[in-house]
Length: 106
Length: 123
Image 1 (cartoon, rainbow over the protein chains, first blue to last red):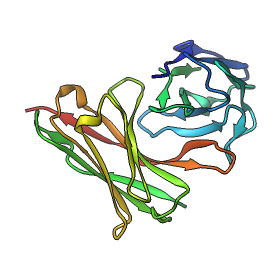
Image 2: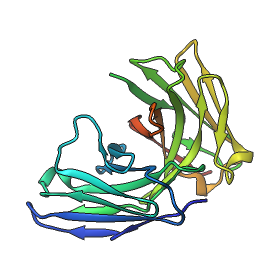
Image 3: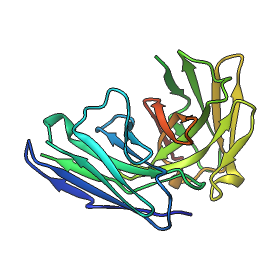
Image 4: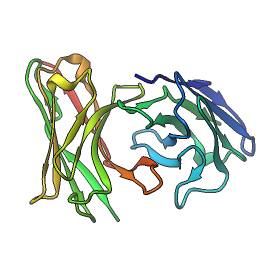
């Protein structure tokens, strides 16, 4: 199985800060990597698919990059509504797998 | 707008079978562009992929759960279901149904999710 390792596991930043989360795959997964946001008590919401594509309706302050085993997710200017937990997910090989999550606080 | 809604018992006894249904509205499950999936989240933990059913009825199950898992379609009701047998306390989790969208470029992601249902395994 492909293991997805996210870092950091949590972070605290100020409104307007640039926030970066990394996701490392245990083997190469091309660009088959998605990012989700989960707010407390809610289902995850897709933000980025195929490493760098912004889901429709998602603000442009969210972005993603990377390929192979190293991926980055960035919030260019953190907003209060961005508080939540962010997960990466690979779909290169079954079983599909998720990172452990990064909790973002302000 | 597509909506998914899980339903089923919130409490299951150890060794029994967990049964959940996901009702899909705003779109047909008889569509070859989607995998209808189940994902769970243990309390305070990350996301754990369980498997999917395709419109044709073909399925995939995570190997570590395969012997206990069954996912099926009911096209007449536009629903799909999860059965997980011989449950233990380790199966206590929030269970989500989700639509896994396949694009022509080969990308796929979970674009619609149910709200989730907490299932507790306890006697």
